[in-house]
Amino acid sequence: MPSIAEKILAAKADKDVVSPGEIIEADVDYVMVNDVTGMPAFEVFEEFGTEPLREKIVLIPDHYVPNKDVPSAEQAKSMREFAGRYDIGNYFEVGRGGVCHQLMIEEGFVAPGRLIVGADSHTCSYGALGAFATGVGSTEAAAVMATGRLWFKVPESLKFIVEGDLSKWVMGKDVILNIIGDIGVSGALYTSMEFYGSTIDGLPLADRISISNMAIEAGGKAGIIPPDDKVFDYLKGRVRGPYSGIYADDDAVYSEVFEYDASDFVPTVAKPFLPSNTAPASELSGIEIQQAYLGSCTNGRIEDFRVAAEILKGKRIRASVRLIVVPSTKRVYEQALREGLIQVFLDADAFVSGPTCGACLGGYMGVLAKGEVCVSSTNRNFIGRMGHPKSEVYLASPAVVAASALTGHITDPGDLM
Image (cartoon, rainbow, N blue to C red; front, side, top):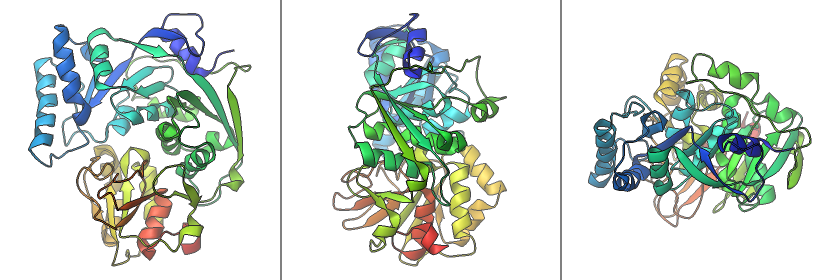
């Protein structure tokens, strides 16, 4: 009667069963590091004095690329040199990759039943495809590079059931914001969040990724959605190596079960300074914005751009607003070009960038000044997250971001359209 998380961890630890709280050592399928977390991982790895397990390592520069200054250039250089020195094939140079989590999925590293770790907290995104994926520190990443294994404490599992049809303009981002608003940023601390119900089944893969991506914002160790035909179809011709879907037993034991009616969900915004500080977008129309951001590992996919473009087409954003649009990967950028979405954004007076994490973490590009307000499709709105500590970030779906860019204040797209 184990959950998905327990079954995956048991399989990777070569055990029949594992129990919550148990410490195990498990085989890891892939380990990913980015330009920020890579340098310390490489330094630790060199101390081992061994050859890396090349086929398990994925190196993706994305946070400070293109490099903004000498320190960020040194970070990127260390990754480039490590890849060259050890002949790491899975290295995605600037211009050939994108934001790490979307790229991991696009490039077929992620598949049902796999155990994946990444030196980035939003590695939990891969649970949308039925994997157990979680963030680790650079030291742990180095250990996996050397041994292919890592210790884990088996988490308890929580079950989230969402039933019914979502209203127009309500997206996966709104689903997870409502859940986090309900349980709080520690409500799923060190647990595996598993998502079920007709609402989840009906969501496109892009929206499911948004949900799994933000499991960490509730304290979750993983955010897993059982794989179905949408996942299997996506992986055809893409996935690297064999895989098997793993599902919870019908009588799986969860430490708690949460049930929601999708008809209760509306376009939702997380106010500063926590993802759990949520309110309906329609109640925040008095909040003026100076910047709107569309992109990131949470909402930088082609489906997100289609929704935003539907709202923006034939219109121009308010003169007092900066709209920054960042495709999550080169593939997303190319698809948006083919579909004419980039032209829609340019016609609306948006600034369109190549793939990068820069603005999301306040690293560079789109950094906020004192007193400025941004409505953002990213995943965190902590103090100073996108710039000055006295700036503010409101988290929202691509639909809310686009509508707000047109009006100059936080806007429910239903009120606009």
